[in-house]
Amino acid sequence: MQCSTVRKGSECGFMTNKGCNFNGGQCLPILDKCEGCSRTVKIEEAVFCSVAPNPAAKWARGACNFATHLEKKPVEEQQKVNPLKASKRAAASRK
Ligand code: SF4
Image (cartoon, rainbow, N blue to C red):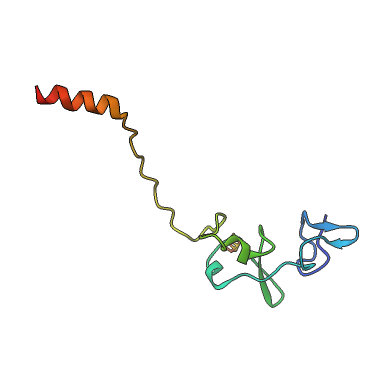
């Protein structure tokens, strides 16, 4: 349903016939950490997030998972080592 509070006209899952269903009744502005993210939308004087009504909640447990302006570090693959096979390999190399 289309928002009729702070982001008028944009589609929102929190909007109902009775008004905004989000805690607080409207979207909250972005944080300083959000600067540079392409998901920000400026509406009148305030800047909001297009995917999260409360940006502070997205940053509460580390970096926001929707952020587009953060460098993602490649996850190093850790090779699983079977301790039994490693022991046998070590024993074989000692011979
Ligand atoms: S996606 Fe995350 S970093 Fe980007 S504006 Fe929204 S809350 Fe901020």
